[in-house]
Length: 269
Image 1: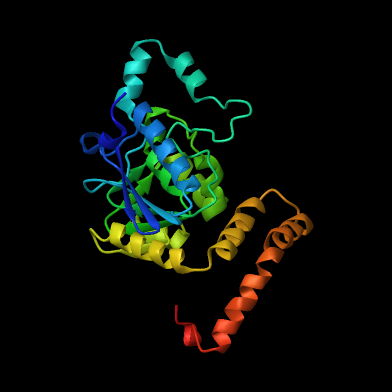
Image 2: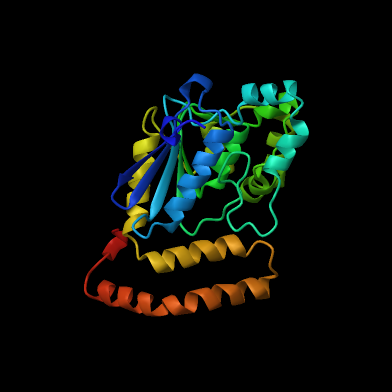
């Protein structure tokens, strides 16, 4: 197994953790070793009390070209299809399940922001969908390009994409596999911000630093409530929201006192 640092690099900027996929020779496509490294990095990030927000991006001008099809071709030549399915299957009782692209089966307790440059296609689109937010450069693009080769979406693409952009947009993208450039991605809600070329990483870090300054327990409770409400009836979702967030009311009262004293007036952050 290659050293993790050759495929996934980690940089700490105070409370912000920057995770970089670094396989430029294949536009940061993910093979088994890289998936393992990404999974390990984000499990460690989630457990680190000093780390508050992560930024995920790709080195050398591309976010991620998906699963490494060259690696897949080698497995196919060796008759490794059944073995690969076994490797990627869910393990009963596994608390931190690993997806084919790495962290895509995890629900972290902290936010991750994707800084998207160049190609974020196939599994790279799924990796970006796994993040809480997506900051795209104006020449970046998404696309379910694996449609052309019969590679299925198995890193949450068929789950997260409809939830994010609605069934109509999702079916268009999933069935056709077409290219989605930044402005269209912004219009349909697939992107949260569009920035100039070469600026996604810094823009995502700036957002991450802002999030890291907020009262964390309330923000994280609100975030988790939003994720966990999907499969619940309205009454149950409202109760879940209350049960998790009622303990944060004291934090809100403290914030109200700061506001009364003059902090954060007129929308200032």
